[in-house]
Length: 101
Image 1 (tube, rainbow, N blue to C red):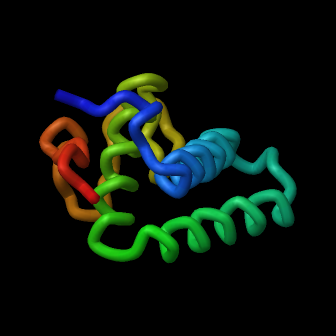
Image 2 (image 1 turned 180 degrees about the vertical axis):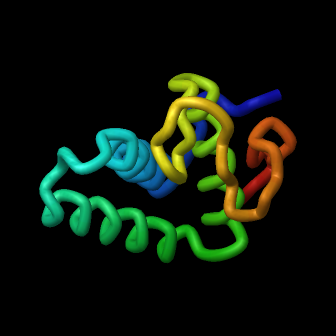
């Protein structure tokens, strides 16, 4: 059973928030200012480092999947349609991150 957002730690919630900000910037294409994009990527890097590996990757995949299912857009390229996961896996086959500490 998926965890409710309330059961995530502060770092997990922060990581999810900055990932979604980055995914939305990617989906916006050439519109956002480069400084805004650099800031968002810096925050993604910061929170991912705080969570550490392999947890950060598992959570990033979980929230990429969640964003894709909610928006129908690929979080990697921002296009409508199939998700282009860097592993080549189908987005629906990627584990949802349950059990990640």
